[in-house]
Image 1 (cartoon, rainbow, N blue to C red):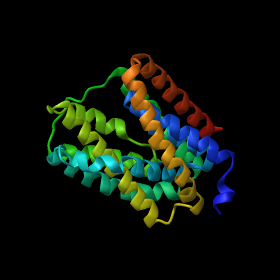
Image 2: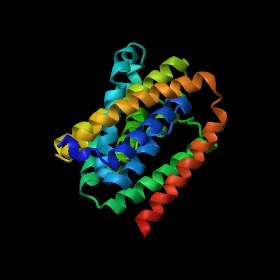
Image 3: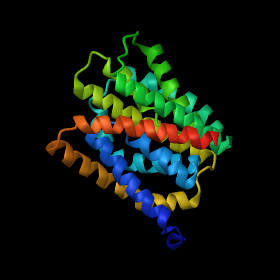
Length: 248
């Protein structure tokens, strides 16, 4: 079975995962937003989401214990419950909807994310249990329903908190990991992950880890400003491509 998956799709998947992880570690955003839609053209939206989730959960697992020591639980816990509720409901739509509809949703959200990043949108609304649950519900609904990593929603919310940068970063990373874990659990519960996807993850997960190391190395030695502009235009190009593919 393993021999059967060693093909061009696997090679391209490894290269995509390497580049996406390096992008996240270098620029601080965008890797998963690139990885999922491009994977969707190779293996379909559901399996693309499943592959990204498996690889990302494994890649982030080693940092979770350290994050738990510094996160602000009063914001993370209600946000998690919002994610749990909406992602569990939305994942049913992801599994049963046709690929064109899912790609259309992906394209729309990726373009919105690119606009948020380019305009440097800042959240100035209320904080507390209900707002945190609302942000979690929105994040989980987008991720659950269309398979698009809705990290920008949480990033905008957490960065507006009057907390040290270290706490903000920990809140973001731990919440993203929880989002991925919830999504993985839902896909497993719905028996939506194919055996070939699990087998591909054996090869692709290490590429994600290596990509993160490469991205961190580049961040320490090269300015990131120019790359952020490139990443913004890359997201726009991917979003438009998904819309075109969904419509035609």
